[in-house]
Structure formats: structure tokens, C-alpha cells
Picture 1 (tube, rainbow, N blue to C red):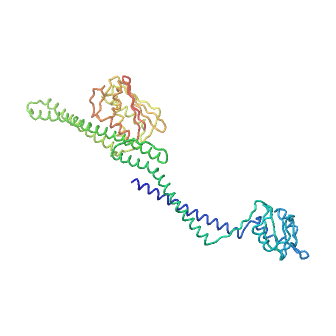
Picture 2: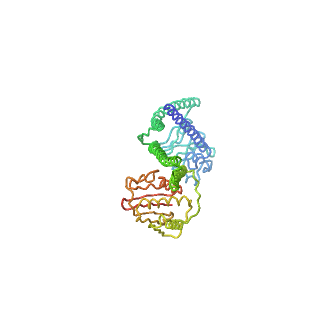
Picture 3: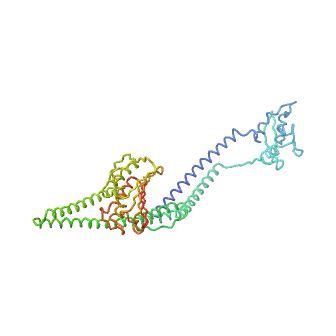
Length: 463
């Protein structure tokens, strides 16, 4: 795997280098031919070569001799130039602005030498052209202007170019291989560590890897975050497995107790049917009925909590004014003979707070919180129900001034079958608080519980 990654990187680098080389070559040749075309057919007017070749336009014949007109003289002064006209014998016919040391007669070889190699001084470049059937030397005194004469052999040039390109290609390939190998090895080393880390995750070994600096820093950081998250999920899974085992154990225990009572009383009635009075028979059958109802409620609660947890329960949403909804619920509680004498107060800072909720399930959740406050405290407890708007949310608060919940029990209040250490009540199936929490979550609401021992408990619902 290591060599595959390195070779893949090398191929990528070599491909990039080859593409760049081809593009550069095309660009170089294009620029070369464009420049060549411009030099041959469109040179700038102000260039020395153009000026010397087109100077004939300023030359006129007067008495058979070449003369430079006023415009030409002005151009010579602007270009810091001089001009010398020669006849067919190489003798000076006329001259303008020529230096004193310039000779006035030339042999054919001297004319060639003057054009190709000789310069009057280091700052003067001489050009040759014709005008009005006379040849002329035009010298430009400008150290920035120069002329180079080059001879070459096409065959040798192409041979040298081929050799040069071959050497260039071989050197470039060697450089690419060496540098690509070194960098590839360096860049792929973290990938090997990353692959080992993935292997550890597959084997459920959530070990944090050192984060290198550079291009892989974000990858390793995300990998470590994933490892930490999977580690937490693994711990949560173990906790849930343990909870599920305890849950099954508690369910078995809770089912065995009523079943034992039902079985015992049923056998007693069966064995002593003729000796039992009508009152005793009614009492025993009433116990059997209550135990069977408890088992039914327990199974219903189990089914409901499982469907809520697995998102398999379809909620019947409708627009409900929560202020009116909770006020009516409070009135129902006060009209209930069981709680008619208890102190239940309702408050609201708004008249209307409409939300889409499942009335049946939300009522069950809120009633469960209220029942807990009433059942697990003495008769003097005051339960307050308050509705207020915190835009764009609606907050429902259920508080009491009862005995509160010990700090060690707070984290387990919403666990199934959990009953606090400060309560002796066995009312309900032990699933009420867990179901209430799951109902609030199913409404995408938030639930918070705070409690201080001997001071009271507050449950806050945010919808």
C-alpha cells in the first residue's frame, strides 16, 4: 500500500511537469514567431534600422549630388546621427554632420568591414543603404544601439538543439523522480499513519493520533474528533446495554409480582370457592383485576416508550392554544376528588400561545410531572404551573415547594423504573418520567429539571 501511494504521487508529479513543459514550449515558440514576424514586417518607426533604411525619402538631387532636405536634417539631429554619401568608386560625394575623423574614400572591402564589424567609436553604430543611386553610411551615436553579426550552420544547430533537448529531458526526468520520491515519501507518510488509525477504529481501539503540521492537519484533527466521538458512542452503547439488561430484569421482576398475586388468589379462590363469602370473593377478584390492570398499564407504557424512542409513533399534530390548554388541565385536576383539596396554581403572562402539538401525548407528559409533584410530597405542597412567551418559544414551568430530589438522584430521574430514595410511593409503572421526557423530545422541545433538597423542584419545558 505504501509503494502504491508513492508511485501514484510520482505519476501525478511527472504528468504535471510534462504538461507544463509542453505548454511552455508552445508558448515560447508562439512568442518567438510573433516576435520574428514583427521584426520582419512591422518594426517600430523609431528603430535605428528602420530609420537608416527609410532615410532615402529625405534625400534629393541638386546638381547631380545627393542633398538631405530640411526634414531629414532635423531627423538626423533628433537621432544624433550623421550621413555620408558615396559614389560607385567609394568616394565621398556629400556628407552631413559627419565627424572629422571619418575617412572620405573606401575600398570595397572597407565598405564591407564598415558595415559588418567596424564602428567609428564605441557609441556609434553604422548602417548602409542607397538613395538616388548613391550608397550612404548612416551613423547613429547612441551607446544603447548595437548590431551583432552571426553565422550559423542549420544542420549543426538542429543537431545541437536535439542534444540539448535530450539532455534537458533526461535531467528533468531525473530531477522529477528524485524530488517526487523524496516529497512523495514525506507526503504519504502521514497517510500510512492515517490508514493505521482507521484500522484501529475498525478494531474498536479509539486511540488519539498525534496531529502533524501541514496539509494533513485538518484530516488528523477530524480523525481524532471522530475517534473521540466513536469512543463516547461506544461508552454510551455499553451503558445502554447495561441499562437494557437492568430494564429487562426490572420488567421481569415487575411482571412476576402481579402475576404471583394473580396466580395465588386465583388458586385460593379455586381451592376454597365453596368456603368464601361474597365479600371475600369480591375482595380477591378486585385484587386480581387491579394486578392485571397494572400489568396492562406496564405493557402499554413499555410499548409507548419503545415506539417514542425508535420514532415509530405517529404524532397527531394540531394547533393548540397552550394557555387555554393548561388552564383547562388545571381546572380538571382541581375538580378531581383525589386532588381537589390540593394547592395548584396557574399563571400566564400571555393570553394566547399557539403551537402544533399532539394534545393527548402532551397532556400525558405534563400531567405526569404534576402528579409526581403531588404524589411524592405531603398534602401541603404548592404546585405552580406557569406559561410565558420567550420569542419565538413558549416556556412551561411546573414547580413545587416540596422536599426536592437529592443531588445523587437527579441524573437518574428520567431513567426507566427509577424511583428516588426519598419517596415511598409505588404509584405508577415507573416509566412515567421517561415517557414524559420522550414526548417532549418528540415535539422537538427542550426539557430541564432542577431541584434543591428540602426546597422544591422545577421542571422547565421549552417548545
